[in-house]
Every structure is written in structure tokens, then in C-alpha cells.
Length: 187
Image (cartoon, rainbow, N blue to C red):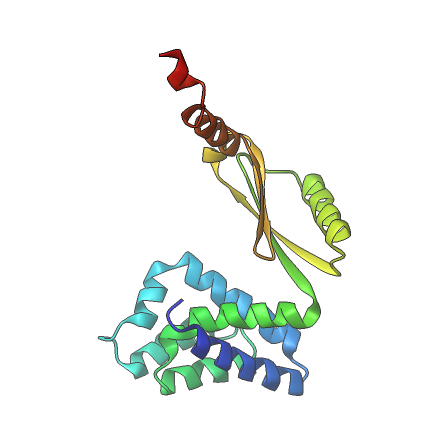
């Protein structure tokens, strides 16, 4: 994150304004869209962060990307960022907005990393288990596939991590072999 304080402040202002205008859910959808664009297109992100491209050109490109796909409030906010020279912080502001929205609505982000894709039924089961075990009101599950885990899963939420992967078990076994006190006595 380039400037977390700045992103939090702009996001807080947008949360307050969208709450005042009863458009909080709409703006959240827009921020999810902007976040997805920033993750999907490296060129878009580079354009926002480029010091060579002039502000009026950035504004035209930003309008071309979001025009008709986001609410008027979000479009005006993005234009404000360009006018203030803060367009480079748009991805971080979008992420900060989503975090603040989740805090307001009591939504907890849970990340599930597995070696193979999981079924929808298993996703719902994991959501329900995490929700029940931690007394969460709402859970938003993000799934990621990482073949390096070999098998099992890694579950992350609220700065906690449950690593039940085979790769983790193999690393632990390797540590035990290197820390074995009896090996030096055999030689």
C-alpha cells in the first residue's frame, strides 16, 4: 500500500458521504468493480501511477473505463481524486473503503487456499463452520488455488491462520529431523 493513512481518510469520507446519501451498498459495488479492474489490468494500474501521463488524459481514460458502470457519486469521487492528484491511490482507497464497509456491516473476510478448486457445497459448509465457531454475523469467503500446498487447506481470517496443508506438515517433519537430539549420538 502506497499511503494507508491517506487511503483510510479518503475512504472514510466516501463512506460518510455515501451513508448520508443512502448509497453505501451501491458505492461498495462500485469499489469492488474498481478493485477488480485494478487487479485484472496492470496497464490500468500503471496508467494511474504514471507521472508522465497528464491529469486530463488520466481523467479521460478513467471516465472511459468507469462510465456507465458506476454510480454518479463514485464517478464524481474518482474525478475529484484526479483533480487532487491522488488517482495513484485509487486502488488502496477502494480496498480501504471495502474494509470500512465490512466493519460497518459486520462482514468478516475469510480466505481459503487449497491445492485444488473446491465445490460450492464445501464453500458453504466452511462459511457456516467459521461463522458458527467465531460467532460472526456474516462471512465473505474468498477461495484461492495454490498447488504448492500439495493437499489440505490454509484458512485465514482476523489476522489468524489455520494451516492444515500437507506442505506445512512436510516442513514440520523436516524441522524435526534437523532438531533431532539423538542423531549426533548415533555417529
